Length: 195
Image (cartoon, rainbow, N blue to C red):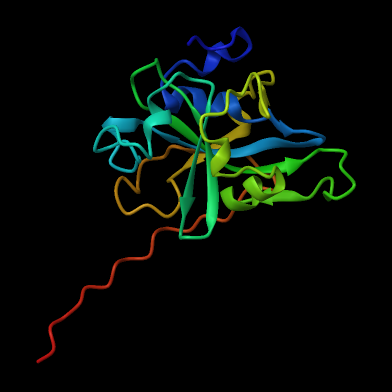
């Protein structure tokens, strides 16, 4: 299956595709979110990625084709969504971290920030059932915008990772109020044997 011509720019390395997603619109029905923050994950080449140890039933969608949605459950209660990137057969994805709500649905607060991956998914009613969704065909769709000038994009470490935590593959629109707060991963506490 090939990438839709409208989304052909997604068929490249996740770290190069990530900034192209800033300003893009993710939609479901009458609700839309303008993406303001994303994080790149380079598949088997990235110890922070779900695909680092190879292909599994959980991460199968990450191996392509590009232009599809990869969803997963985190902390036993939240759904997160990624845009699949990279050539078919090679894992890569960009986590959708935050955006500004644009939709016309009266049940959704227009202009409200969808700050954080879980809130973004709740705003667009993205669930695990959307895993593998073709972003050109829907029900969740992606419309790319003109590229944002590099001077308006900030970069920094990815949020909440223990492995590859210092890699500056989080991208956001500088000064955008919908961008989530950076939080490093909490260090794991080592158990000590009882004396």
